[in-house]
Length: 162
Image 1 (tube, rainbow, N blue to C red):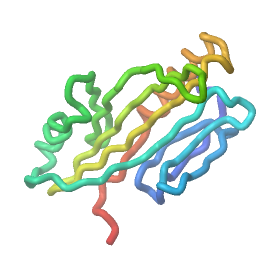
Image 2: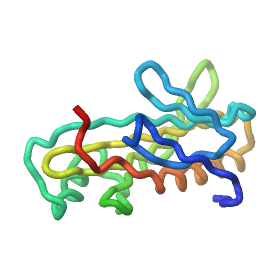
Image 3: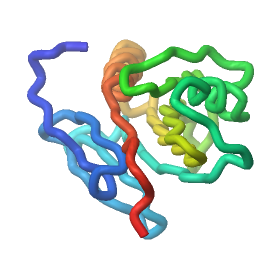
Image 4: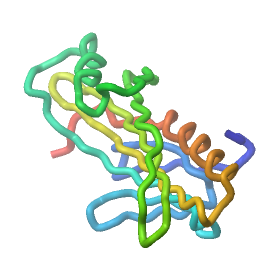
């Protein structure tokens, strides 16, 4: 990723997830809480973020937290990459779909964090690429750039606010 591009820090839902996006990108939130990030001058790429927080049926400690994540369906049968802060990244790959008669590509990543004694948080990032609005090179570059942004995300490791 070109680090020369100016970035801005995003605090999704307070501090639930903190990550960077390009400084010129717009930040919006849908009614369901999904964060939406995009370049207003380029309709070919949109990044969406949603977080699922759940309770594990069994207690765990910091030593077994990664194992709790790896046993989650979100992390099974895909490449898992350990990240700082005890997080785990699952790259879900790129799939093709159709929207309004146009082919789109959706790249997906999940950043998970198990917070002892029972909390599991999954930050789900989805980049929608619209190939007919861009070049194949730009689409590939966008996926690589967003993948690097996702790798730097930090999911909140503290207790759930009541």
